[in-house]
Image (cartoon, rainbow, N blue to C red; front, side):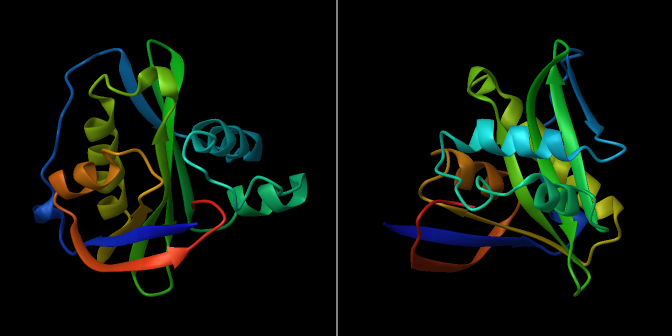
Length: 168
């Protein structure tokens, strides 16, 4: 299938337009130590709705290597104690940080959590000392994904039509 992929970037923490959520039921914490089972579970559960396919067939050793790789930072969002979503940040070789995976589980979509979670992801990326933070999203992702990235201050630097078997 052909999708439109949008590549977005932010070059300074001052560009962040935060969307705070003053709700004590939402907590966002690092997953430490890394637990590959968590990354696999969230990728598969969240990604099932958005055609994330690339990592579905990975075996335990590949998931373990991925989740424990230096430079990968995984965070869990919990709402009222229940896992609600997650994001992964990966430091790249050029001083940047990529938001590799980002999403909410179905029951938590539409509750205003996405903007707060993305705000936290961007704040965490800047705390890593990044020179830029980047992400890509496509037309297979949640319909509000691109709008959320832009609303937080990220800017599109490239779009492309790509043929994919799924989305990552």
